[in-house]
Length: 354
Image (cartoon, rainbow, N blue to C red):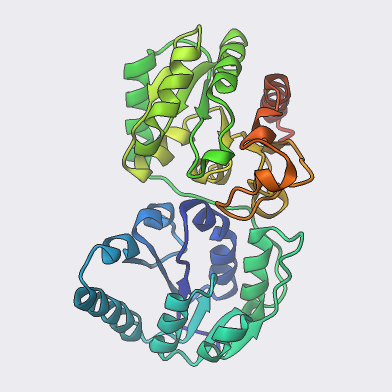
């Protein structure tokens, strides 16, 4: 029997949420009459806003929960379990199979509950899928889980949706900051949650100047944690960029990125957002693995140092074990390589070849 109510558990970071939109699309297309809901983190929920495939986004906030006293944390967890139970779902697909999402899957009471086969959590699910992580991109990993109920399907590109009003507001803001005339916008994102993933600010500044010389209007992007890095890039540029540092609202970032003709970023959430919007995107990789976590889509390029010690364990510095300095892999990536990747991608996109 085909499910009428589907719940997808996707509790992870912003970039991961972009990379699971193909799995959500595959479920929606396999069961077109079903109502599909998604449980996600508060800071990632905006990725799914306006997605016509999703009937409801259910938000949990584990960051806020951690600040509460023990009894309030327990009550909040119970509220989340009651929330999924009340949905009366026929099918639950847990894309990341964490301890909390496993509890939610079990609490849902759904007759079919699907996730990756992780030994300590198999009992939460009716279908446990073996997933090969070695050399397999995160998007394909999650599609393997979905295919347990859909059967084999093509892997779509990531997708993000915006409302016309959001695009108009982003256009207005850029017009106020940069004027009406000039070339297309090129966005630079010099931040990253992990310092080791950051390409040096002076390299971003040099890249910005080269893009400006080529006719681009450069925009330096960043959230509240990236203000220092953004200012360092802007102050290091000879040509004056538009500085959009300290943006707090994710939907605002998404709408502004959507107006770019080119986006160059470290390995971080906005890189995946740009690729999911179809913006020509260059991702710069050092300690992380582009095979597993690179941007997906037709309009992407990756520049990686390819050090033999890469990838590092997540958020763990092992440079000293290999006789390397922290961020040496990022410092080894020259401006010329990134500029050529960006220029080549932009030219291919203009010709409709990317």
